[in-house]
Length: 114
Length: 115
Image (cartoon, rainbow over all chains, first blue to last red; front, side, top):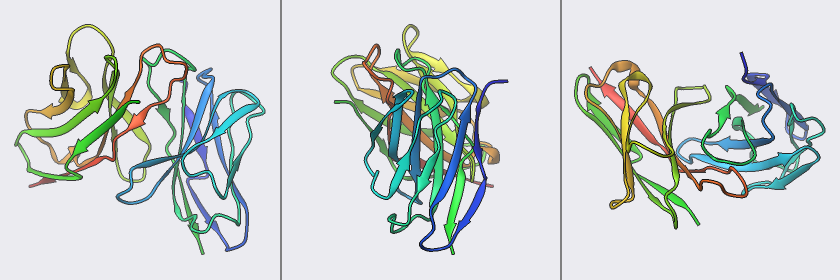
């Protein structure tokens, strides 16, 4: 079955370290998205990509970086510049245009700074 | 630009009672509308969507929503709440045929179901 896989489910990071969250999809979707979720703050867009080798900043891109070298993969790196990285991170994908399909989400990665 | 407002960040109902979660949107053209559900420590799952056609749409787990253009609303309802309905619910909007497929999400409504 097609879907999105995020790994790992739980991740612990020491202060000052960079960590990379994985997101892989086999839905043949062009567009992929990264969201951050904090209690009571809904979903906040970090980065999105409409096509391979192209991506745009979302609302809270500072302290994060992404790459889109393959259609199936959109990894997110949380850098040491991100002041408060502890959060739940969600990856999603969709067709590039049309709108009727909405997003398919992964099951999330919970990142904790220790 | 589109936007979506969910009234009530927390809603509590008794088991067996009607569930009503409110969503109002702003859009220059009739949009596509979605409701997603999120259980603790999980991703979002599509409950239902309105794109074209019948304005009353039925989704999974007994939920339904009605697109009311005159009221710019897309409220989510379920006649009888179950304990398993306790979750966070997100309304989302996008423009049909837009240059991108970006969804605009509401801030979410946390539904609690009391025994």
